[in-house]
Amino acid sequence: MTDVNLQQFERAQRVIPGGVNSPVRAYGSVGGTPRFLVSARGPYVTDAEGREYVDLVASWGPAILGHAHPAVVEAVQQAAARGLSFGASTPAETELAEAVIGRVPFVEKLRLVSTGTEATMSAIRLARGFTGRPLLIKFAGHYHGHSDSLLAEAGSGLATLALPGSAGVTEATAAQTIVLPYNDLDAVRAVFEAQGPDIAAVITEAAAANMGVVAPEDGFNAALADLAHEFGALLILDEVLTGFRVGPAGYWGLDRGYTPDLVTFGKVIGGGMPLAALGGRAELMDFLAPAGPVYQAGTLSGNPVAVAAGLATLANADAAVYARLDEVAATLSSGVSDALGAAGVAHRVQRAGNLFSFVFGDYPHAPRTYAEVQRQEAYRYRAFFHAMLDQGVSLPPSVFEAWFVTAAHDDAAVARILDAAPAAARAAAA
Ligand code: PLP
View 1 (cartoon, rainbow, N blue to C red):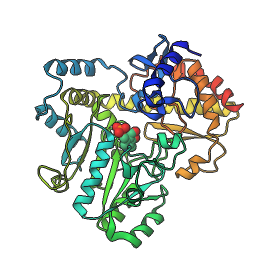
View 2: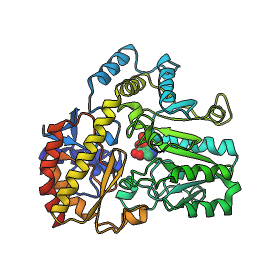
View 3: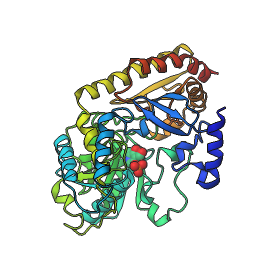
View 4: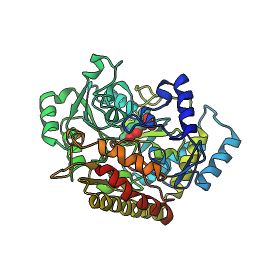
């Protein structure tokens, strides 16, 4: 037990609900005392006691270059020195929009916001405003942030806490979201056939990674685009987590062969600062105010310090970075899987690009839906997580989250994780 972390947690609980500013940070599903972090560099984070951990959370995705990458820190320092926020347009915002459009060709225009939640919420309002239709289809286990209409059967913290939704969301709002099983095109077609004229959009994670990782089946995203278009609805591809992480053009870049109407980005696009975006073809994006009738705004939207971090991150995310992310993901997923196998722990490795996670239990085939991943022996992860933490490896504190690698995970960091895995696997076996 770490006394300084415990003291910090107790102190925080007196003034912050649950002691945290985002639920998964509370270690609710793995138990124990959350580590309070004071610094991070490369693949490492350091807690309030001065203990260093190899990190596989990466701020839940943004840190693809590793923590406090010198080029990103320098860009942020320079931008900060020029002014923290102007509430007016800056040349750098246009540069960031151009950088995104250069990487993701179906995006013709981009609107910057501050969080992934705002990006998806605004994309849905835009879809409703453009189509004049009320209903939304989402998939069980997909997380798109915490706006009211998207909290039905969502992943991430709701999966961790086993919550079907959130108190405070009215029935009228919940009724406008139709939740379907992931990877089930028949279910999507049936709903379109029954209620097509009322459906504004289908929103899907480009690859699900908030119920653990569950990749779309081959052709699933393309078929969703076709179905939505057949019935006059839009496809919103949520790349908040996958965008610029699994490749320069996100998961769409691995998947291709279809054209989403709208896409949302977050995490990597802000390089660790509060920045996210929605984009799509010009005709649609021009429905946003002030060009069009769908209102969307933000005091800190396009914040110059955040934009500087995003630009520096994208500029440094070259082919070598993506090759390293893929290499680290392959080495870790197979090395940890070997350790689990050697300890006799039944499991499957779930992968989507360089995102991966483990499901615990005897699965005849890779789970494809939320119902299937929920059936796993989640308790095993609790023992596994703590045995890793005790050995100086910080994993996501929930089995329903992806493991996030960075390009700064060098061979020494990878070796530390793999050295810790056998003991953790034995703990998971118990
Ligand atoms: N969409 C996806 C796929 C996410 O993974 C997340 C956050 O994890 C969000 C949206 C919400 O982003 P934010 O936490 O920045 O509001």
